[in-house]
Length: 288
Image 1 (spheres, rainbow, N blue to C red):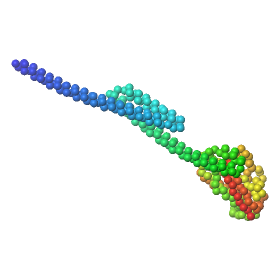
Image 2: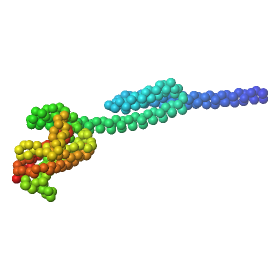
Image 3: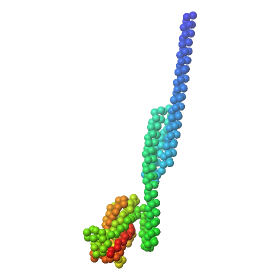
Image 4: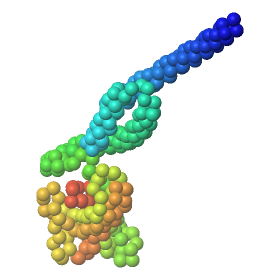
């Protein structure tokens, strides 16, 4: 009787233990399924984000070949990472977390490229505006030169859009040996002509020569004892005086002096101003 009672207690104890183990196993199974589902969702989310990043890279393009090559290289990295994610089990938590870090790095790199492209686009817009303005000015200049003389046809064809240096504010005066302004031919020691070279961000930088050709009241070119020659648009011309100026794209005022060898007479003097690229403008001064 006592033996049966002990056996019954043992059976009951084992049943309780079995029940507890069953509960634990069910709880472990549910928790594992939840973890697997979470990891699977993380993998799917990571795949979607990588696919979107690949699409974003495909939309980026520039006129810069070197930058385009770098963009293609990063796009390949994204494609390779997508393939690695697909081949990795969702339960491999450490590997999925590693891929998430790599995604963050690729996104940071992409943001850097977007900034570079934005900077290039801004620069290109500015250059296009400058070029459009330069084309308009060149067109107006060609029309004026065509109206003045037929030889400017050749000059207009050779004008490089956006790089023509122009002048304004041409002013000629006579000065005495004491460097005072005068309108008397008998007191005149030199003729002084000043103008401003207009600002042009597309024009070549560096030293350049300004040449003047002075014509007397008899329309004859005045020169020094030594005949000085310069070339403009393939044509060799004699000049009366010249000066070198350092042009760096900003507006700069320049003055050139001409001292006659045989004095000055009464009448109107005409002074043409040139660079080696073409004629800048003309000014006149009347001596009494």
